[in-house]
Length: 219
Figure 1: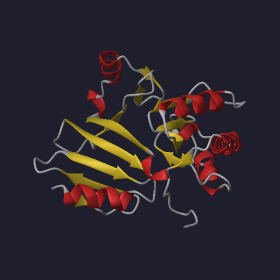
Figure 2 (figure 1 turned 135 degrees about the vertical axis):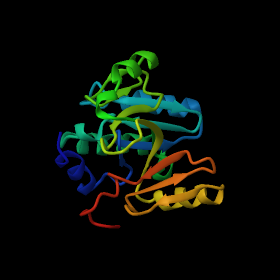
Figure 3 (figure 1 turned 90 degrees about the vertical axis):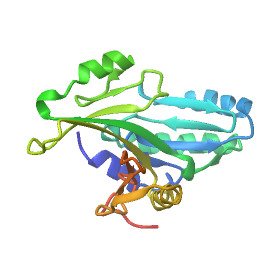
Figure 4 (figure 1 turned 60 degrees about the horizontal axis):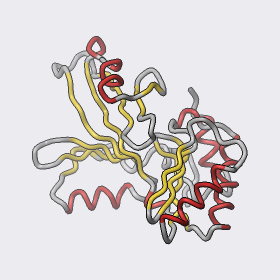
């Protein structure tokens, strides 16, 4: 696993339609109908070089394209693939919408000796992607990530939601959540990430990373 692939992707030219989420390079192309989205999906599927982790999701007003489902699996060749897919989308009169790109992940935390990933994969019908997570084979459900708690903490288990968004959407999403009654628990890692909570204390992390990773040129 290396940062080189996704950092190269984010620094490349000609990939302005794309966002790198926790699940890797992703784009949303707006369409005027489900038929247009489906036709675009057929055209994108014909682009040479798509890998086994590619997921195309058609809806009545958009096509979502995920190239890898894992940011650590981003490689140099994904830059050319992204450019080619954007060209196909433009030819089909589809409009890229970076603000619509997101991924929701369930983080299940436990002490190191209590991590139970086989159980969660089995109960959800998920498959492995890496040693610490599980993914929906249909590409529709949230990724499940097993997070090790600090062994010095008395807490034995916890769960929270991670929402991965583009670097341009993090602050707006936080503002919307606060306006809806939430509160900011910590913004120590902003603008890369914020931890929020609802009135009952249930936590969610808004992560504008790695899309807004430090060391990359700002727009």
